[in-house]
Image (cartoon, rainbow, N blue to C red):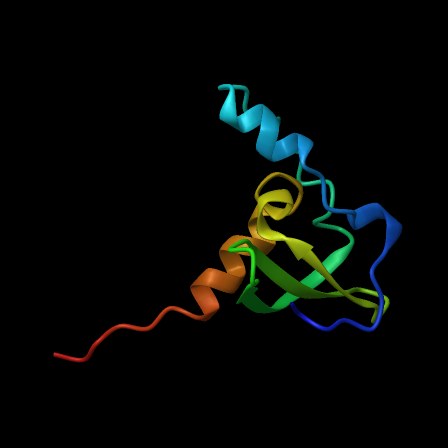
Amino acid sequence: MINSTKKTSSTKKTSSTKMTSSVGFQPKITNEWDNYIDKITLMEKTENGTIEAAYTTYDGTHGAIDVVDLRYKAPLKLIKFYEDHMFFKKK
């Protein structure tokens, strides 16, 4: 599990997102954390198989959250992390 200095109450892990996805309902993409999260700094697979992302907020707070939540609440930050960590083989 990613060690973080602080987990904020607004970024609690929820099982409802996973549960509703399994029955065909896709929650609305809100981007509501894009003005809160400055940068995703690390991703790590947990012992139970989920992926957690460590992040830094604009005020310098650090935390960690399940990537499932980021897909809906901060997808642009997630895409930026993936783009920054892509690499291509030279021909």
